[in-house]
Length: 148
Image (tube, rainbow, N blue to C red; front, side):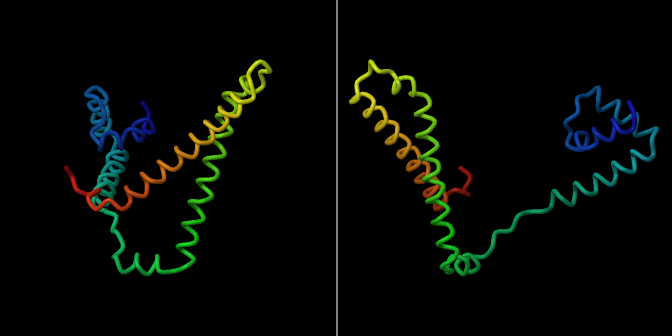
């Protein structure tokens, strides 16, 4: 294996993801290659720094100021409306493509065709509605960050 092959294994080595055979081969290479050993030391230092980094949530005051703006509220509402309409349209189109053979069949009655299309439209609207409801309640769940 070349140095480049071993460099590709450095992060797996640091994350303890190598099997015993690859780990021994990698450690043997490190003993004979000071350049790779130096690179590994730098990666260890970088890993220690990045492992200590944590995402900090903005304070409630910042969120209240953000959502106090009319533009921000309109933007989110408009985004959800467009998403819902597009999801409903795509679900109806996909469903129509699935039942297109039945719709085009001249032996199937008009009532059956209208019933299938209404079923498809209602199902699409309900799926999007339930998905939006789950997202709404999940985002407002006071206990979502509590480990059970």
